[in-house]
Image (spheres, helix red, strand yellow):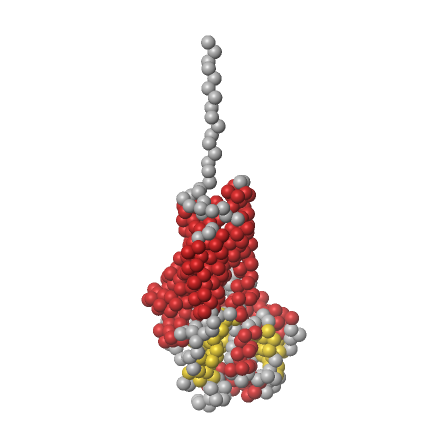
Length: 526
């Protein structure tokens, strides 16, 4: 007998995870776009929450990037686990609202978290504060991805198309968020206002999801949170009387603060100008050392200053020595503050732009080029290379002088100043370098300003120009450093200046926190 055929049943189709209500694809994709934008804005904005306290070094950026990636990884895993159990639209909205709640708390948690993490030091403290302040929100927002994919794939039927659509829309949102953060939001609004505004957007988005999912009570609670949060954005309380300005620019948090002895310009908490409140003359001791330049070239008529700060160096050259001085400053906000709060002369022209590009396009003929550019405690590394020094040399007139103000540790290894000296010496026939403070060779943990002076012409010792014991030049001569015996050449291709300065960054920021913690923590609202 022929074998009896057995008819096999077709495999049962797997039903998608249960959903409480149908999810319109338009809402899910729109939410994915907004969440993607918020994630990137939070990542960039996070550096502005932490850097005024911990600085703008590589530690802060690495901390925020690492925390973001780790948080999104955890969020994707948890979101996948949730999506397999309940991929309803209300679940997606709940994750968005939970992320909003945490972002709204960050402005109130910031001060305490930064203080708690201070004993950990610069590296661990920046990582710890980034984790506590931003990881919870980023994990919750990362969880929305798998739930959104599950919702959209059930609508589109095709898994690959649904996954690609959600990832593509979310990534597009991240791109838009990055552009908005860098070009519009951070330079225009306070960090606190931006955090609350992002929370407001997420509350609205989550509340809309509850409405679509017909979760009336959750929608009403979210609406109440929207009203409360909108009230908090109504305006800041009065600012402390000695703080004249608090704001953000493309390059950091800016503060103008009146102290008993003078007025300070702070960039991420670092002093970038200290003047007498009445006369606006500089109170920073190293500024007097620049008298060496006109003493070397008494007939100098034209100077270029790269970096403005409070304007004390170009102001001194222009007003005290009668030298026609130009300034190039990359941050337009600094120009505004120098003119408004530090009496920087209107007749000294300032060009807003990158110093390197300006020098390379200039017609040359300068008697002095002064590099005094900082980004918080770091230096713009592209202005400390063999290639840029060659451009400066071409911009100088015969026997012109290139001067650099650099913050460094003159003793101990690694010595960043030795690399700068060696790079200058490769291009210029004469180079001298002077300490700003009277440090001893065993002061290996102390930092100070260093003044480099380089020229193709002769550079007599300051004491040969004025041997009076009480003179500025005689004091400068006593602080001259011996030429180093080694040091790497800094180039566009290889420039580890920040790495060579790492030890100083840690000590400098530690000193700032111990001496000026209240000023560092102040954001204009407390």
